[in-house]
Length: 226
Image (cartoon, rainbow, N blue to C red; front, side, top):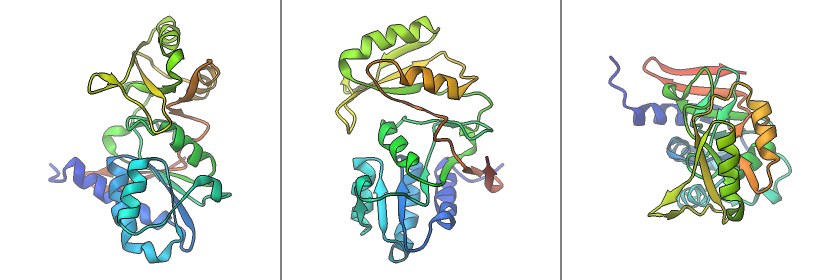
């Protein structure tokens, strides 16, 4: 048995992601506990990069605290790479993201990046998406109708709470989490749900899928390419 903890695996993939960072450029940085390990690793080569574009206030604060300049995404035409975690990733590179409530900004940065590198531990690799609740960022007045639409699809949806109140995202919106769905066609699912009025972003990343996934395993970092 491996003596590596889940935290150790996150550290491994965070460090492994450094080789995808292009010297002299701005790097796209995601959100979450695994990405925090990457940010810590990035700080060791911060003199070699121009800075970062960040997908959340939390990541921005961590980057700045480590002396890495953070740019607004509007200041950057294109990013060479975006490095972020995933709640689930399948064998095609499709992902569920948004457990950290940053899915909208994550998808925006992914869309302006030439390469998406997913960093995760091997527990996140699945055959079909849907075991992890699918996060959907919604405009608050649409939440209950969207919950009913998911119920009609066979899903169970609820508003994500924090301290007993609806969680408010960095964009001022709410999150609906959906369970009970087997997403066999991620592209079709993302297309359908994205068109519902009031949906800001659906946490299925099919159009902005991963190109590379670095998986932390007991045997070290396993690289999957899609």
